Length: 433
Image (cartoon, rainbow, N blue to C red; front, side, top):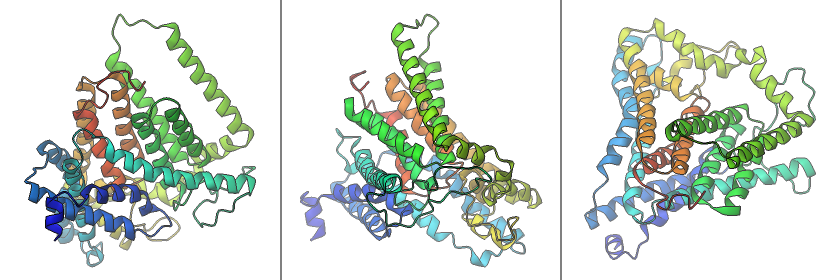
């Protein structure tokens, strides 16, 4: 019966994809992730049946693109063998179960491949609109929390890691960071940065301006140094490389350019004074520049694996200790407080280096370099190139604070990078500028 429904197009396969994309944010929230996993697996299953019955073929270029991205993880399967043989007396490999990670990566890759074929060819950005809708729901809960914290009009009933920490002796006029229903600010801010990029891509006019300020406002209110750093570096990197790509020797700086720069500086100064007045700057300064920050478990878990790797065998240094092996590093090492090292460093580069070795880390950096090369090589508009660069740097720099490379969020941004380097999404140049 299901086969006949799909064959006659009565069954809307894309609905499952759209629902999975909407629920993508729930994986890091107080909402149970059952719905997300149900729609994710269902979309892959029905998408596969749809492709089989229609005789559709997956995009070979997208297959190679995803394979390049997944190459470090695949290498982690190879690294499991020397890790188990030479390091099993150091780490408890009996606790290691890489199959969940492996299955998750396979399902996510199949989701993107089937989504790419099932979407309408004339609506290449549809998938990102559904993902943006889900992120908007999350950001709306952040606005709800802002209203609750600063006006106490509407109570915010959800318990998250919204408290301030690592402030030392700083005297601040607030005691809550905005998380929405996300479990902590570092989750929330990465989605707000994604929302900024998607608003540039999908919206025009006053709606785009509103969404951009909405995302930036909540990013600021999150009081997340990691979010500030990622956004600043992604924006600066996109501006720099866009400038380098499109600048010519005979370029002329017009009065309009100067007015835009002046408006940006004035706006930045106004925001800076407001943050200074309420003590936000003091908090961010303490969190980033206080020397005690370097004694935190998170920082310790980010740099010590590079030290511990020198005591490993030659094969593990090259190919890692195996997929998801960072989760058992705590069976041998502890943070300064005496607690076992956590299951992840929250840093994609550290996790990949430990699990897939120097070769795996080199492959990951090669993938990002390849995407950068493809963007700079493309002949699309300046606006599209800027968005593509921002998304790429968002992926790269958020990886220093979130090792979520096995999440749908990361895969949808990887897919967006592919789309922006392969399709002219703004055929009428300047239509959205």
